[in-house]
Length: 90
Image 1 (spheres, rainbow, N blue to C red):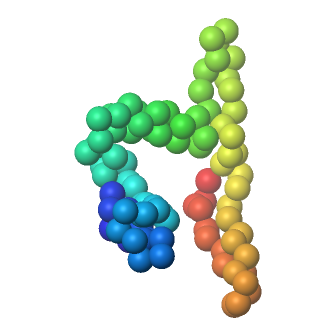
Image 2: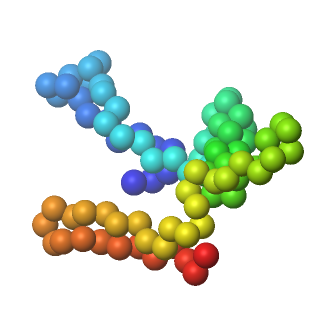
């Protein structure tokens, strides 16, 4: 899929009855929309909170949602077994 270009289908072949099936976005492709910068900034904040954690208002450390001890993401594949992605040496 091309980032920012929706994949749509016509219902019963009728051009007036379109439905979006999927759309892939990247942070740069979101910048073409009026709310793109806000979405970009929130996504970057979510990334930081998920993987790095942050300081709370009282100064204590809030741990990341995903601790750095995670080494692999396991994705089951229905036809060919299990697929593993190595995340790093963390």
